[in-house]
Image (cartoon, rainbow, N blue to C red; front, side, top):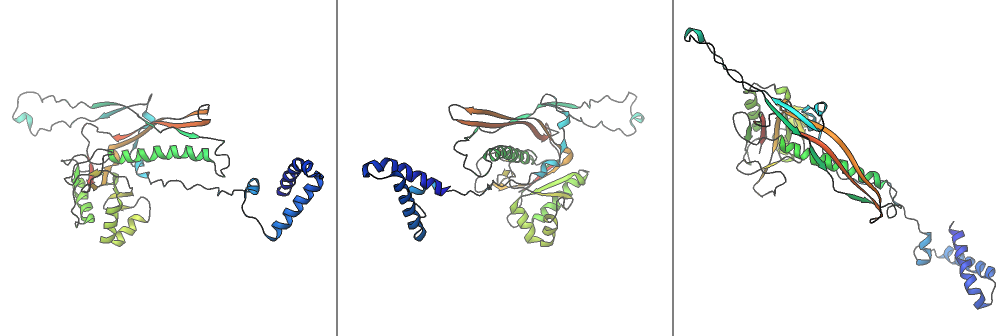
Length: 333
């Protein structure tokens, strides 16, 4: 192919120059090609304008994508996707337990009192998660060796998954420190393992089924566990579903921040130097996940951009079942 292109270019040049030199175009073509071949045989030319049409760019057919964190912790929840109707979910939170009376009729001549223990209904709309539009230009990207279109769509999916996981971890972290939720604010030299044991005692005292309890260890707390007990760290990090003091262990990087005083910061707020990144605890029986419609929105062949435009939208909601008064959540700071 290279030789054919050289001959063609030499012949076109000869057609234009031969009349001025009173020479045969064919003879000039043969002379140019022979001279060029002889020179480049002894002194190969690696670059040059005349060879621009003969160069071939080699692209590795692989694209290094952004790392996708482990978001499997979301599965430790109740899947309510089957109960979604028109992107709406109806929840019911059990009311209070009735009072218990000991030997009531030995001291009272009246009937037992009637007590309202009505359940608390909730109707929630699934949230709408949307990605920004991106352009895919077939003309500009035709020379790429990898599938750019597939890469673009994959990044939309990953962006939704990463954002949803971060917001889920935020929603499932304790917001209050009270009789049913615990925020444990450790000092710089306090034992993380001791903190986890204290959390175990707190939730056991609430008569919870500890087989439903989960913990996400952030990187700093995981490192402190490793320094305190290397054998224990190896056990919890070597296999999926491992437990530490009754808590099923997960590792995730986007856990929420709390102030030094133990106050949960708003999602996405600026992190100050004194803020603390949390490890979070939750019960699988107290949280839910559900997904609704998923759509890829495409404007193909947009005339103004001469490109295809893509965005992705998903209806989903990951939250707490007892939204009015959440129970059995924890955070270690």
